[in-house]
Image 1: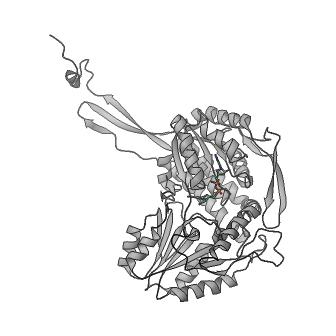
Image 2 (image 1 turned 60 degrees about the vertical axis):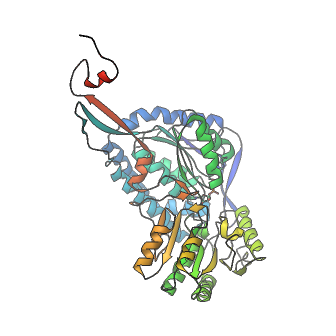
Length: 491
Ligand code: NAD
């Protein structure tokens, strides 16, 4: 079954099908029917009908469902890990140790956060009135997620939305919908009322576009590329919907001359190869002090050559395939073009027994000009550019020389340098002497063209709620003191 609408798995009504492919071997995992207009309407209607009761459930009731969901997911963790690994081509070690436990921890976090909505103290801010704040759910959330972390991205959209009392229609990327569908099924088993979470398997250009413009959708929450993010903003304008955008990234990885070089080399390898580099926060632009430049390149190249490409089901595999052949070919094209203007080390399509999958070898691109495509555009593959600098000012300027502002890291033992870098690099997250770790309590989100709005943490609850001011007259007077500003009664 390919859709999850109003608490049930159902088929899409277009009659059109899509094969969900395992990118590690090109085999079809399953064939799903795609959603169309009818399904968008049915899902939004279900979410709209579920909203009054769910938004009035007490925080404790919503929390109880999430607590149960965390427990059920823990029981089925291996099933989630296997499915996520197969549909997205992730090494099983990554889904077992990162995607699935991270999601379970997110659920546990939002089970607590659901009971901790905050606002300003009730009080007499005018002598004649008592003011209070209500923090209320927004309504039906129309959400669209990408293929790189299908389960985590679905969770990051769904959890704060429903913890705050909203209902949601989520359209995952059509090539990786399986764990989103399973997530909704398990949430229903945990006691989530029908219609609170609905999942549509459909194309962005049809189902996605309709969801964005649906008159009964109150807010749009999108994770994906900056290009499609602009389309989301345009669509939101038609009915003035609230928008939450998590977009692309091109994270700088700045290595100062006093850095622990070995630590920086290890950090660069892990930070650039996580999820085959298909990570919006992945280290993509190493900016390295000239005194360490060649040593850094040699160290990363050595470790890249040792990374084990392999079948995603093998726990010894470090690096899996890219999500599809089309995407692998896009990455390969960018690297091939870079050979014309930069020094490319490694890279290429492996020719061992991996040819059926969309694999690509780790690649360093040194000496790339900051104006070049490889330095500027999102590659979303296992590719790291390396650029030298001489002064700290140059390093910060290079780090900020991008339209993106999602994540960055600074590598130094000097606390003052670290403080300066964290203040001056324009990104939603800056790590010092590390790159990648995320935690449920802290926000994830961008600056500049990486979008706005925060996922995870209690900041995300702010995104999915609206504050309402309620003001009570304290005097009981027919003629209020302030009325004299507008009119005066004759005696
Ligand atoms: P994408 O923008 O191509 O697609 C994202 C989603 O939008 C998919 O579900 C797709 O079907 C849908 N879509 C496409 N065209 C649409 C349209 N016209 N109308 C409505 N929906 C449409 O992105 P992708 O290739 O799936 O994912 C990779 C991108 O996501 C990268 O740019 C990456 O940086 C970004 N990303 C950002 C974050 C973050 O938190 N900032 C996290 C993960 C991924």
